[in-house]
Image (cartoon, rainbow, N blue to C red; front, side, top):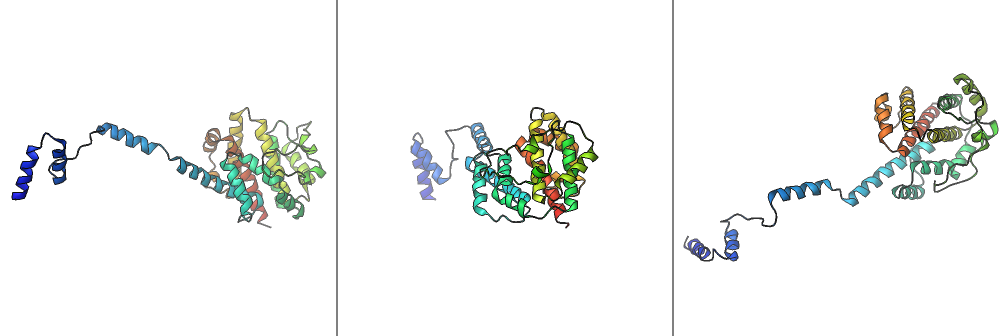
Length: 289
């Protein structure tokens, strides 16, 4: 007690000095103050820090999302469960992280040598696969101003030019450059497609349907409202196929939800949402062989 009293007396003698204040703080006899910032300033700084994302964390999040999306593209396009070419996958993932488009990546894959080999070596599509293709192509072309006309030769020919980086567009074939001179009804288009594509492989059917879908997007690129309506109608119709399209939200038969999605999300992602559904639908039918 005598020692504490002496210390207190010493503190009083030095009360006018800053060291005395620090001394009292060490004894726990006074509160520590923060002289450099008012409470409201600290609160503002804390809120600002919590709202400002760490650039490295944001980049890592984007890279993770791109990797997951690319994995889906690989599995759906090649109709496989695992990714067997890790080196190629890593290169394309890097391209996505650097700003490459999903459409460019997709085009590169279906124009690549591996996909060409699958087209040429696979057996002809089953009647069920061919029917789904013809029905979907007829629906798609019914919404287009300039649908393609396919000759039996061009329809089954795998692409002969490879664009490994996915940056070049698919060359316009003779079949794709023709236009319909007379509008046919749905049943006539389906019948013509069945005759034209008989003997084509599942991979050819998926590629051709994907190409026509991208042509549809190009046709309506200046009319986003019409494109969003077509997208929503297509998604709702395909939800009736009872095929799992990979996410619960994709399987919803809700026109308004999908219409708003197409208006808010990037156009490149909307393209993949359509391509994903076409590929998954035909893949699902192929598993019923």
